[in-house]
Image (cartoon, rainbow, N blue to C red; front, top):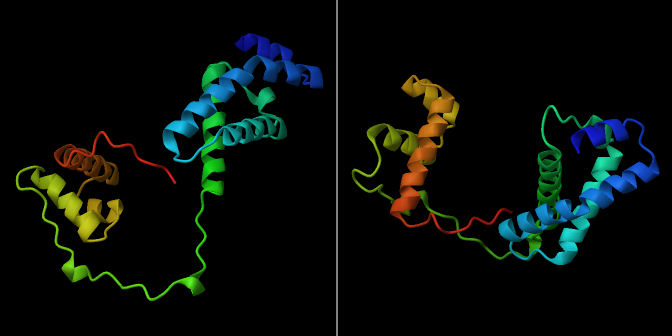
Length: 181
């Protein structure tokens, strides 16, 4: 199949493009359908159709068929990545909430002094506790925390991720699905 694309689509005619999409549209629809309905609340079948059309348009407009290489990835992986990225772009573009600022009444400001949250004792290691406090309560970036602790920013992000996973398990938030907006 991969060599079929490389050989067949060096010179892309309308017939070749139609053949490509007839062959692969079911896979594209399945990827888009599974992704939209698993990640976004309120996705509809018309959203799936719109995203599939945008995938086809992106592939044609950017001449992706001629850029495909079976040495880099399989056809299914290539189509999956394009379909998923177009679906994310589509949902981000269409799920924005617009608020008219003039219609808002007075919004009470959160008082930072009233927010008091203590991490469970002994749940996190000393290093994880330090990183979490510096990032979330100290409003520091990973690079800044890394400089203070004498480690790399990548290590800081890894420690933060591990700490968040422990906290999620402790507070039973692991099984809940995250809605991407």
